[in-house]
Image (cartoon, rainbow, N blue to C red; front, side, top):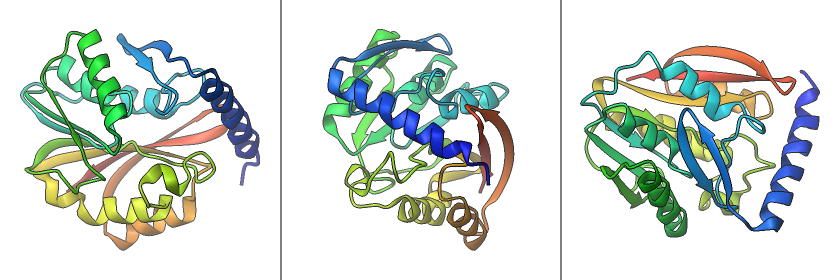
Length: 219
């Protein structure tokens, strides 16, 4: 295994500690989307992560026009906003913290997007209906996302719930998009995919000395 991931996680945690202690929202632009990212929310900056940039890079060929989209754990709202700006007709964005949802809604307005339905939901608990696309770009590293941040879930139980339930919310031709990385619980991740007979296409890229993977998951 590439030991660089340890250095990356330590560096990332230090950057997050400084950002949290500062307590001031960070302004970034990604894929033409303007964001104010509060300290409680994952910062999708390409200067710190390859997760969100890799996902957006790999969904650009998909047609969002008229599609129904579910964004689980919306955080800053970037993927829900991306969907709206690319023609999605119905977008539901979830998170487990009302303050986070408030700021995600502010980011939507900042980008002149008004057709996102923001709801408080732990994974699929409050979600209804079926969607053409589901974003599940959730936590990867146990060090950076402890159980208290995941509303009682561990990284592994989050994945088990996600992969055992996502088919109930996808249309027949729908797809779920997510990323993973070398510093996550890789053995448990791939075993959970196999256990739940998840059909997926994977693409990997190296950034910050570690590999990151994009997953396109079918029903």
